[in-house]
Amino acid sequence: MNKTQTPIIAEKIHLIKLDVVQQKIDDLAFKKENEHQLKIGHKFMYNLDDELVKIELNFSFDDKEDNQLLFFQIDFHYKVDDLNDYYNLNETKEPVFYSLLIVTLLGISLSTARGVMFSRLQNIGVDNVIIPVIDPQKILTQKNSINKNS
Image 1 (tube, rainbow, N blue to C red):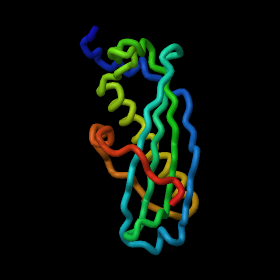
Image 2: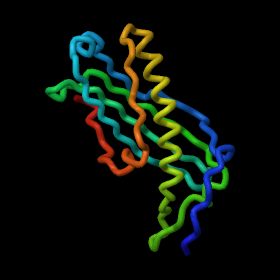
Image 3: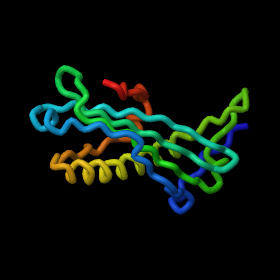
């Protein structure tokens, strides 16, 4: 049975935990490199019974030869009241989440990650590394993985 998409109500979304799971910073190499290529990957996980959602974001700044200079994995844990309003079950009883919910959570996560990374990098003398404003819809359609061990 298909439901119509429920509007997002901001007060029903609670960021309950934020974890910087991994960070790799080669600050000397990063400072020497003039051009950095930013790659962003994501994973979406959920617990329907507890109304929990987790967004994992991976950020990699690489040089021209694809050497990884900076890497962050940041996990965002959300409690979404009435989570069942934001998905349908497919034929195999798996949830298919509305893109509006995922895009909203990605947008919140990206904005929060921007501040976390800016602060951590500035604290070690890597100034003015700002993740650009990115359309979360484009991230949703990208390939999800970044090699963490480059």
